[in-house]
Image (cartoon, rainbow, N blue to C red; front, side, top):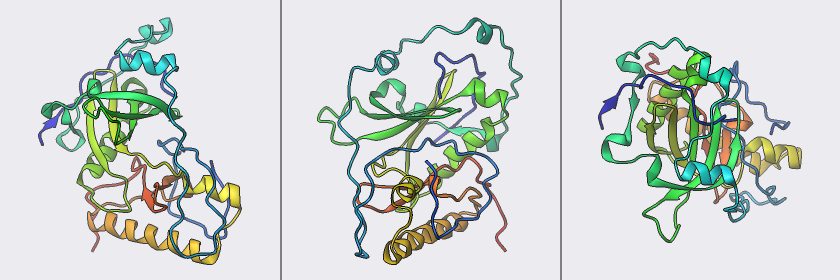
Length: 267
């Protein structure tokens, strides 16, 4: 897979925009807020069993959202006059800051069909999508869209690129999988696993606490995820319930590597 330097960002064509308490506290540094929007789902069943819980999946997507229709058709929204006049300072990224771009192998924005909006935050939005070639819609993904102009203005572009490149290297059942990453002059795109069970913070808020067997289960999988990340000489640095997603089978997926630090000597 080749490397592609980030293109000179222009103003984006659209304005892209659950915590709980528990007896167990996660205390890695979380000096900055999460880039990943929380996904909602029904609460976990109040089971006393030690087996994985299985949250219900998201409802079937609605196709009436005009915003999705515009994005799917590649139709940009008009830019605000103030944003048109905004000038951004851009520096060519170093080799360590270049995005591993799947555009070189033909995976681009128009390779996907957007079906629903899963969440939104300051940096961008997350959409439910599937490949156009998947006519039967047998496999859905979460497409994370990050606005370049906002990232550059707030000096967060390097964090987004680092997140994509770390996830491209990672291959672990308890770490979110990045299937493809690519870019346009306006946006960065990451196509990730779709975790229909929401995040741990959502379920902690709903249930207030887990029983002992469930807590041990989630903690054990989180420890395995962190142990694997450390084996890549990466420090995660943003461990909190909002960044622990639950997949359709009830297992955890560690997500949001925007604050992670690469090439750390673990000796």
